[in-house]
Image (cartoon, rainbow, N blue to C red; front, top):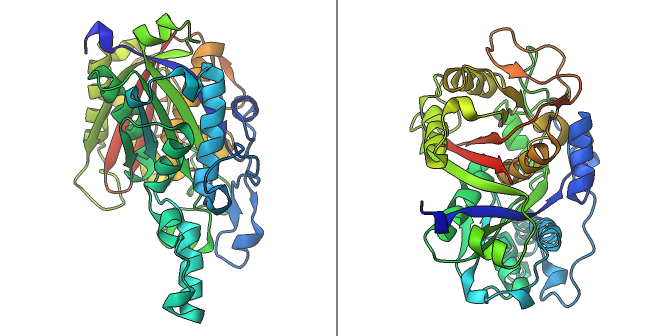
Length: 401
């Protein structure tokens, strides 16, 4: 990547079970405060814990189709609005043809599918809303953002399961580095806490009804969650020219695929390792330059073991490792973007948050997991990892601004 392709993070926004803005979410994560609670909509299921976002009602005035927006699009619009405010950007400030919108999601508007299925079952084909598909299709969150922002540059939607948020960041960075655009509005969003989706994960043995506790010796799965994370990326020269806030530099991205199993990671994590090493090479840094890791850390027995193994191999100097899923649950396709935003805040504050819910680190893991309280730890460079069903692996490297 040439110097002209350098990418700066100028804004970020978060909507999670901890709160409807980045400050509130960061406070909860930094304090190691879990947000899981019993969910009345999941009552009677084998697992009834979730990390659900309180209703997002306040949308931009005049937003086209606002009344019909699915929860996932509402979360995305809220997070993006905060990110643009922090970046001191508005559509009036940019050349719309030089702006990209890139969204990562695992499922899209699943509530629209549930509603349409129920109506079809009881009322037949003519009872299905003509707006069903515009709510359900995974690309419609990006469509809602482009309509609201008036963006006419590239609009992409990535559905690489729980790696989607990180892959969206990587795709956006490449658009900027290639010269195709000056600004990319990136968002990871999912709102899939429904009885059907929860039952599906439960049947796979992926969920815990006790709580998420990544890297704990007694971990038994994750808590399903919803949320959105947005980051504004800019070509560094463009950001400098408008005196934009500089929150961090996005210096490296890598991706790979296991080609091993539809849902299980390869036990040795070799392709996940390849994604991490590719991100470090893209950033032009050595493994020893990584000061801390925001791990995918889902709290599943197999997933955490695989990730701990590959991190110990790649980073033998044992930088501090955290995972936000003990606090926020697993937000699926939103996780990579949410966790990248949290990594930016950790770099800013010279702190590595603790893993909420962690009581005893699995003694088999040769990594330094932060437990109990946040650790003061100056960092210049941090790594954020994401892994998803289908064997998707992604890694993002961020540097202090």
